[in-house]
Image 1 (cartoon, rainbow, N blue to C red):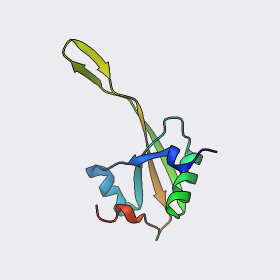
Image 2 (tube, rainbow, N blue to C red; image 1 turned 90 degrees about the vertical axis):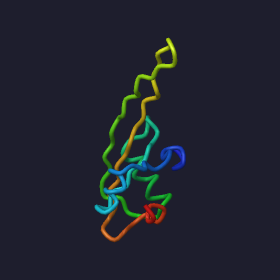
Image 3 (cartoon, rainbow, N blue to C red; image 1 turned 45 degrees about the vertical axis):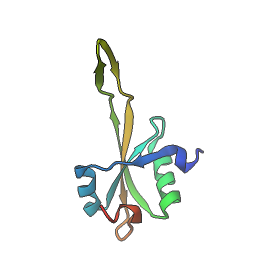
Length: 95
């Protein structure tokens, strides 16, 4: 089993993800190789909360152009984690 810090990269801070906090759902960028069980265990270990559901989304990288060179940004994976009623992650409280 991998360390929780290797699974969770950083929180997703966007208008939509901040709105989901009211529904007790928190969004994180996670390692592309992480599965739902690893994500659940990582969130429970790092934040001392009970996870009810994990949903994952594979986000394809975008095409980027610098002069005549065309490249792509890296593919990423996003996880939306639903917590048990009454649980919350304090770091997201000020958003």
